[in-house]
Length: 114
Image (cartoon, rainbow, N blue to C red):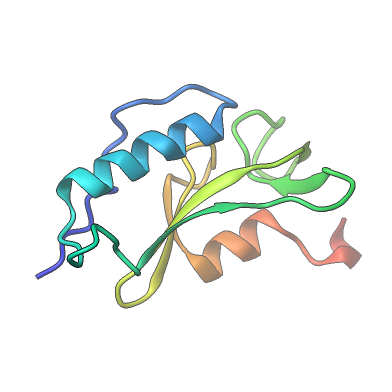
């Protein structure tokens, strides 16, 4: 049985998502059953960006409330899918662990709502 080790926040620095996710990945590698090459094909560190390096988010701790928007240059999240995708984002005001569908709906509103 595979253990999802990315449950506890051992290291957290506000607004340093890449370091937070690096530590989460390291924790997952240390505690997760993997294949012979040390890989877990159900886990990903995901860097979100665009050519302008301006990604509009809602529901981030650095913002002014859950519905307030904020622009990050390159947020990084951890996604674990066994069997359904779960997003880990410790800067999210809705909790550090959401389904992919919840995370996308809460973090990236439709353009007409922006």
